[in-house]
Amino acid sequence: MTTATYRQPGVVLTDRRFSVPLDHDRPDGERIELFAREAVATGKENANLPWLLYLQGGPGFGANRFSGKQAWLGRALKDHRVLLLDQRGTGSSTPANRQTLPLRGGPREQADYLTHFRADSIVRDCEAVRGEVTGGAPWTVLGQSFGGFCATHYLSTAPDGLAAAVITGGLPTLDGHADDVYRAAYPRIERKVAAHYARYPQDVERARRIAQYVAEHEPVLNGGYKLTVEAFQSLGILLGASGGSDRLHYLIEDAFVRTPGGFELSDAFQEEARATLSYAAHPLYALVHEAIYGQDDRPTNWSAERVRAEFPRFDAAKTLAGDEPLLFTGESVHPWMFDCDPALRPLRETAELLAARTDWAPLYDPARLAANEVPVAAAVYHDDMYVDTAHALRTARTIKGLRTWVTDEFEHDGLRSGGPRVLDRLLALVNGEA
Image: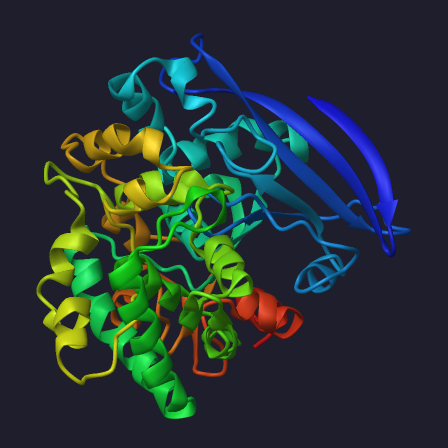
């Protein structure tokens, strides 16, 4: 383990690096590096504080890069020493992207490598480093979104490592196939789009105009991103976050600019659209997003794409041929993304092999969760676009002793947007103070 310590206002930070096996079933085999940032309140550097491990959402995103005590961190630092872990393949941990994956070999070898980047491997990483970090003491895990999936796996496989578990917007279906996840998702997405158009009715015509232009011209954005109508629709991912509807509105309100050749998509629109749509900074999200639901001998087989066909109102061609509002889509990964996005194009065959895979290991143990003794609290957002509320509540009823806080005050990013209050409420629940 290597370390480096420095300061920000109110916080002392220590960067840590760990070596862990790529495959924990082969501890003497290849190893990869994990990066984590320790945070402790100024003046408490030498205090004997309990540890809180933060697991970011995703998959494929590194832990938050805070400045000082932003968002929920300030609340956590009141009584914890915090470890912000870059899960394997993300952030400053050993990367997995179009530049590095060819080191593994061809698509088959790359796909085999990426099977080690799900919740089961992440939790085993946590257990591998816990002894070095805490001296063997159990820690509290805070799991946001996919981090909550990891926390649920933790409760299923290594509960002795946990003093408590706090989950925000991340209680997974325990036995549902990816198809079940997306059949529940598309109606939620349609509700979010309807709410957006109710707020901004002028966006109905704007969205149709942009989609028609894209269908006719198929523009290539800066950096080589091919904007298709389906890609434009996927900007609806913004609608799952607080302020996301406003952001989508501002993005499309001035999409066009008059040029000597007529109206074209403005550089400003193209740049913000590219920044929102590209997976260059988090390719693992696209590569293993559906694999996080794989648990049996059924392939995921591009579930979101297949299930979308069951909801014809999302068919842009039919919409543009008629007069219905264009429906945006949400948090889903589709095969065409690997054609549109230059960061994903070299990984198309690798993604196909992952989609066809049929040997996924189980991720959750309902019997063990039913006998759970670890204090657990979970925020369940009433109409979360990313995680189905009914699935989350069904899982909550399975985990013995879990206390839920169901709220419609926040979107999926409630931990960020309402951070101190959200975390304070959940810590009170697991500590028996509320």
